[in-house]
Length: 299
Image (cartoon, rainbow, N blue to C red; front, side, top):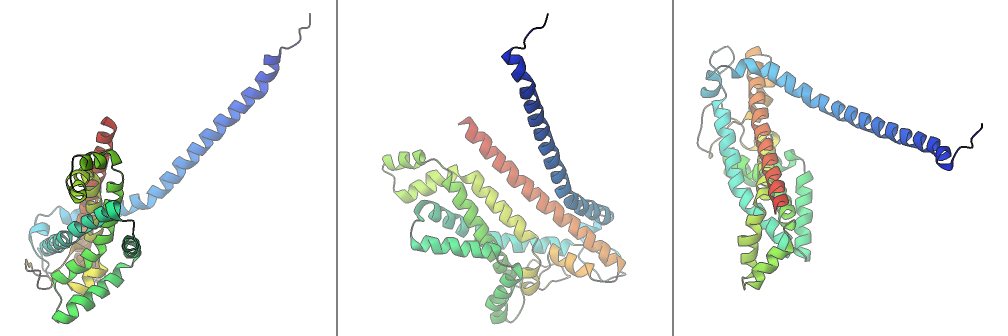
C-alpha cells in the first residue's frame, strides 16, 4: 500500500544536500588555507636550509668564535670582532632608544590627545617605514662628518633612530590595552597621574613593552646599511666604540662579495650565527607575549 511521504521526509533530502555542501566548502577552504600557509613557509624553509647547510661547517670550529677575521688563505679566521662589535653597537643603541621610546609610548597612550601627539605618531610611522640606508646617511651626516672618522658610536646613533619608532608604537599599544579601572583606582587613592602611569600602568604593560623592545633589538641587529655608512668595519677585535667596528651583517655583506671560498664560508657562518641570534630574540618576545596573554586570562 502506497504511503505519502511526510513533510520532514520531503525536507530531509535538500537539507542533507545543503549540509554536505557546507561541509565540502568548509573542508575545501581549510585545505586551501593550509596549502597557502605551506607555500608561504617554503621561502623561509629554503633560507634556513641553505644557511644551515652552508654555515654549519664554519660554526662547528671553536676558533670561528674566539678569533678575529684574517685575510684569505690564513687559517684560523673567525668572527669574534663582529660578535663583540654587534653586541656593543646594538647595546648602546638599545640604551639610548628603549628608555626614550618607552617614555614616548607612555606619553602617547596616557596623554596623547593633542596636536603634538599627532605629530609624534606621524613621525614614528614615517620612521618605521623609512629606508634604513636613508637613516644611515642621516647618521653619517650628523655624527661621522663632524667627527671626521667612522666609529661604533655613529652606528649606535643610526640604529637608535631605527629602533625608536618601533619601541614607541609597541609601548603605546601595550599601555593602551591596560583597563581603565587600574588608572581609576590609582587616581582614587590620590596618586598624581604621572605616578599612576609610571608605577601602575607601565609595570602592568611590562610584558608587551619588553616584547616591543626585543623586536626592535632584533631588527637593529640585522641591519647592514646604517652600519656600513657609520661603523665602516674593522677586522681587529675592538672594544672602543669611538673607533671603527665590525658587525655580523657587515661580515656577511663583505665576505659574500669576495671571490675567495674561505671568506665566502666565513660569510655563511656569520649569517647562521646572525639568524640564530635573531631567531632567539623573536622566540623570546613571543614567549613574553604569550605569558602576558596567559596571565591576563587568569585574571
